[in-house]
Image (tube, rainbow, N blue to C red; front, side, top):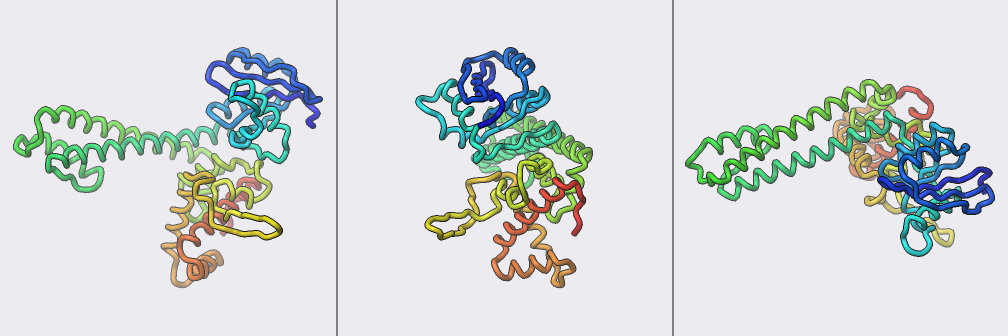
Length: 339
């Protein structure tokens, strides 16, 4: 049992459910509070164990509580769900968080600092705007294709073709739709400018963060990969070793053990951090596709032998696994990459 008080928080937008548990494990209160009341509670309370689920704004509240002397424990929602009793209410959710926080076997989520959180926000915004650009471009192509007008591949070809379609009055495209097509074209240009601006600001932010510069020296890790590795691993304090860190993006094989028999299967394609795993896989694929015929380093020799033995795809996963382990060692020790 913890030798300190426990504050379990069920995070919401305006009304928060706070369950307070004494050192002896007795529930002292479980009531809703407002945002300002929650801040006053964290400021006035003596240092306690502050537990909550990993969700929207959880990193903000974790940093706020940590700045006032509390110990943070951010729990995976999937682990908390098993401890909820009865119907799903704010009260039962807060009680479940309080119970789960007292189990040491449940692994906590890492709390991001401002730098890590900013990089994550840049990446999520880049993916969101990029998805909008692709969707809007596909919609424009499909709209013109319905009237027999095809557009070559590529963004530059699309931006060049739309004004030509609008100026040609004899191409069969309905005049009533030309205003809509013009508006879609302008919207696409705005979205593409926004995407470039996000990428530019993110690149500038990465240059100011020293760990990202060290991580960029890894094989197959560029600005996007270094930013995602740093935002996910941080200083590596949430993982005991590189093997544990490699399980976070899901580049380690799954294990099924029963009756003393251990069965190792492939990676969990639905688990882990899919975005980070995809970036690492693409980086590993670029490295393997450019391997020289005569290796000059031990890692190149290992990769060539691995590709011959298990194939390209498994070799990519193995290299991604090694990349995460090396990144953890670099971030936890503060050292630069030594090929």
